[in-house]
Image (tube, one colour):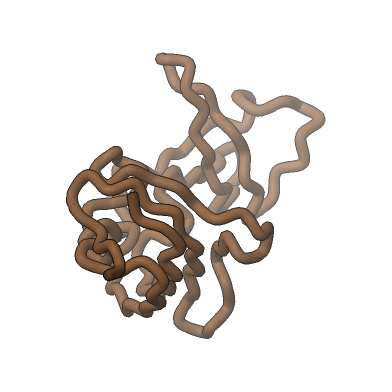
Length: 144
């Protein structure tokens, strides 16, 4: 009998996240290294975990998730306008550039440059897939 994923299961699985156009946003298959998590450890959002609950070892599944169930909506509070002087002078800032910012607690957080107007740089700290529907494909390798 195959083992099913429960609330505290340790799960080894491959996943692929695809965008609306079918392009791959992220995949463990690309590197040949499956993901490992303990259900409830915070590695995945509650909605992604809910997709895995009850799945059996050896099975493959595909889930269509709307923005609210995947990476959440775009939060306008996560978009900040920063003065150009806060960036290194030699840094060539352009739209789409992803930079790493250090938070007061020392943690690193990525930000995406969304626009530049004069000395004002718009930086988006939302997850890059926020506001987008995704297809979440999983292959459950082992369940402990």
